[in-house]
Length: 158
Image (cartoon, rainbow, N blue to C red):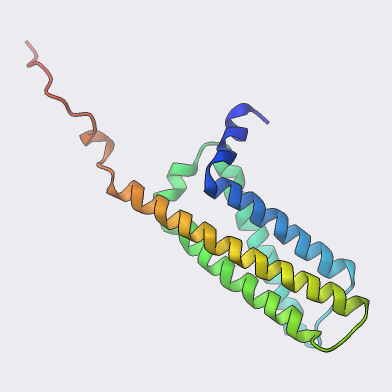
């Protein structure tokens, strides 16, 4: 990893993407490690789909940011929209995992509750990331275009 990629972690969006990615891997590992499953197949489908979606897009954004493409992505609403959707999906998946095993004990219940708790923490990280994405988008949109920046009075050409 070169120094530019490491330096990109000083940006809040890049650091938060890495945290989101790591927490999603942890929640998948904890949920699958305990062989926790939902009583309905739709619960398994939603939990798995939410985890796959968030880990894929967060991972791709993290790679793009580390390659120096941060400004290109932040010129659009994509990161803000994805962070809002990711927060909603993670919160819902966490609530689903916790409510499925509410009042139950055992290894599966402990793993499901832990995975659900990690998902809820991850949704909070997505909310912070959405805030920073919105701030970055607003700051980029309020800057004049590059063609209008640094337009000083130049001497007339002869």
